[in-house]
Amino acid sequence: MLFFFLDFLFVFFHAENKVKYFITWGWLDLLSCVPAIQALRVGRATRIIRIFRVFRGIKSAKLIMKAILEKKTQSASFAVILVAIILVVVSSISILHFESATDGTIKTAEDAIWWSIVTITTVGYGDKYPITTEGRFVAAILMFAGVGLFGAISGFVTSWFISPSVAQSEQDEIDIRKELKEIKQQLSDLKRNDMT
Image (cartoon, rainbow, N blue to C red; front, side, top):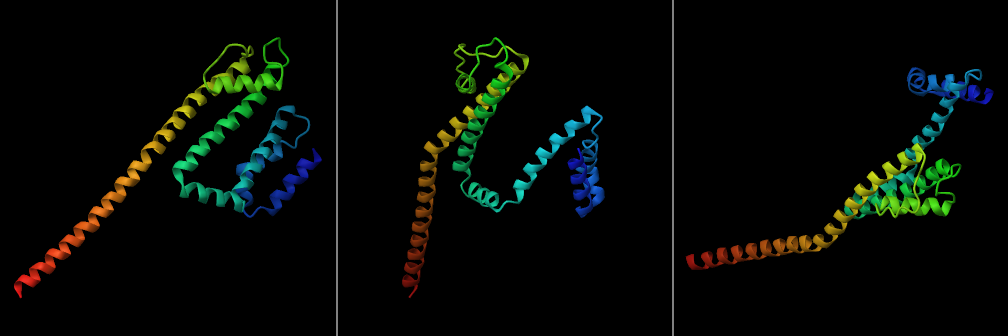
């Protein structure tokens, strides 16, 4: 408790804009320091969220973003796959947390991972399923995300099949324009020769 209060004071006195800090995060940091009120301790979790803000300043994140923006189609497909993997991991951890203490069918990490993969792909064998309200909520989110992600993946696969023909047609158009330019130049030269 004292640590959180000292951290609040340190950040407050070192903030460039004290009013902005207090309006955005400071008031929550100050309230989370109060030890007598249990409900205010939840504010400490917001500090974890603030850690993610630090990631914006990392140079490697900028390099990754540059690479992503240069190859949009490939990077978007890899991003979809990465999101799918993150969803499987997070939902496996969540479902194991919610379901392991009950008499449900998901008892081990292996069960949770199997359930997540089956659910995100919308196969749904029915051998593992959540019985708690929280587990069903996680399942609903995972199913909706799975439908959207696999729709996006099928779109990317389609674009990979189509893109070579589009690139070829663009090259053909460039070649035709070059040939037309050369023909125009030759016609112009012929007209000049006829005039003389």
